[in-house]
Image 1 (cartoon, rainbow, N blue to C red):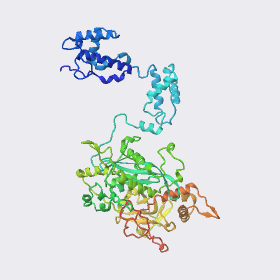
Image 2: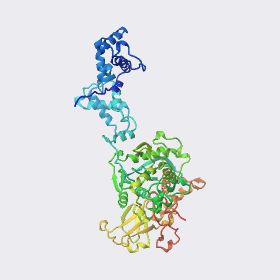
Image 3: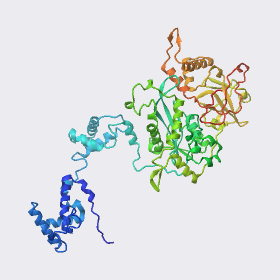
Image 4: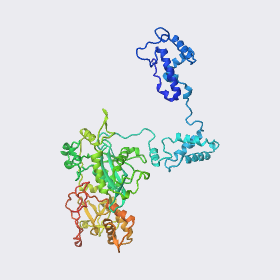
Length: 626
C-alpha cells in the first residue's frame, strides 16, 4: 500500500487567536504566488509577474525572488525561510503557516492540584439528589472533603477566582446550582448512547404515564384545583389513543384508559363534521366493513396494544392493571426505576400537551410556582367534564392531524406525516383486528377483592351490599380453595353504589347494590365515604349514609344560610365533595341490558330507578338517569 497525499486539517485554524490566523492567511497569499505564479485573489486572465512565472523560473528562483520582495517591503525573511513555510503549507495547509506557540494547549484545569479537582468533582456529584445550593457552598464542601483526607490535607487551596473558574468547567451541563428537577433528570440519563426500541406496527409498542396537568379546574363546589392527566401513546404512529383527566389517578382509571384505547371514539354533539373518521385520511370505509362500531366514530385510530411500557407508579404496577393487561393479552413492561429515558416518547408527549394545549386553556398555572399568575382561582375556569371534552376534541382536531417530526419519510426527509397519516400507511401492511368490549369486559377491568357472602350480604368499609340473588350463595364456599372459599368481587372506587359478584356456579356476574342507596341521590366514591366516617365516629351505617348525602347536598346547593348567616364548611369538606363529584361524567348513557335494580325488600320498592351497566362505552355515564 502506497501512502497518498493527506488532506490538510485546514479547519484547525479556528483554534488559533484571530491575529495568528490573519497572519497565516497573509503568508498563504505569498506562498501561493511562489507555487503557482498568481495570488489567490488575482482576477481571471491575469498573467504571472515575470519573476514568479513557473514557465520561466524554477521553484528555488521564485523563493529567492519572494524573499527579496518581502525584505524590501520591511518583512525580513530569507529564501530558506520561504522554503520552510512553503513546505509546511504543502504538508499542513493553512495551519502550517500559523504560529504554533499561540495555539499551545494548556492543561484542562490549569495549575490547580488534581486533589482539588477531584474534591470539587465529588462535591458537585453530591448535589445530584440534594436541594440546589450556591457555588459558595460547593467551594466550602470542597475544602471539607480535602480536610477529611489526611493525604490531601496539606494541599493548598487556590484563590476564590480560580475555584469559580474550576467550578464552571466541572459543573458544565450538570445544573449543580440550578433546577433540582433538571439535575435529577440529567442524572437519570444512561452513561452511553440511548434510544427506544423501534416499532413498525400500530400497537407493537405503547407507553403510558401520568402527570399533573398545569391547568386549574373548577370542581363541583367551586374549588379550583389541578387534576392529573393519564395518557397512552403509540410509538409507531405517535397517536394518543386515550387521555383521561381525574382528580387523582387510580388503578381503575388506568384500566379504563386501556379500554378506551381499543374502543372507537364516538362523535359528540357540537363537534365539527370534519372530525368524523369518514372525513379523515383514515381508511374508514375499509375499516367499517371489519368493525361496525366505526360507523359514527371520530377520527382517532383504534389501536390494540401488544406491549405497554410504564413506570413503577402504584397505578401501573397494581394487580388490577396487570390483570387487565393479561385479560386483553397485553405484555406489560415496567421501565427501569428512575430512568425516564426508557419511556421518553410519553414523557415528551405529555410535555407537548402542556405547550400545545394546556397553556391555551383558561386557568393555566405554568409548570412551576415562579411561572404562575395571580388570582387564577377567581377567573373563568372549566369544569372537569368540560375540560375532558376539550382535551378529547383537541386530540382529534390538532394532535392527530399535526405533522410529527418523528414521523418523517425516510425517502423524503423534508416531509413529516401526521399520526393519522402514519396509521393509514402502516395499516396497509399490518392490518386491523377489532377488539369489541362488552359490559362484562368492563367489569373485568375494575379492581377486585375477595370476601365472604354472609347472611346480611357483603360489607365493604362499613357499607352493606345485598340482593335477593345472593340467597343461594350466603355462607357458602365459593369453590376457590386458594382464597379459602371467598367470593371474587369487583368494585368501582369512584362509585360505591354497587359491586359485582362473580357467580362461578352459573358463570355470570351478579350486580349487588348498596342497601342505603335510596338515602343518596347521586353516586359518590370512596373519598366522600371516608370523610363521612370521620365526621360520625362510631355512628351507625344509616347515620354515615346521611352524613355523606348531606355533604354532597351542601356541595351541590352552594353555601346555605342558618339564622341569616352563612354556614361555614371546612375546606376539606368542600374539597372532598368537589373531587368526588368531578369524577361523574356528564356524557350520554349507553343502552343498558335488562337487570333487576331492586334490593329484595318490599320496603325499598320506591327506590329511584338504577340503570345497570350496559355495553361498554368509554364516553358514557352509566349513572345518568332518564
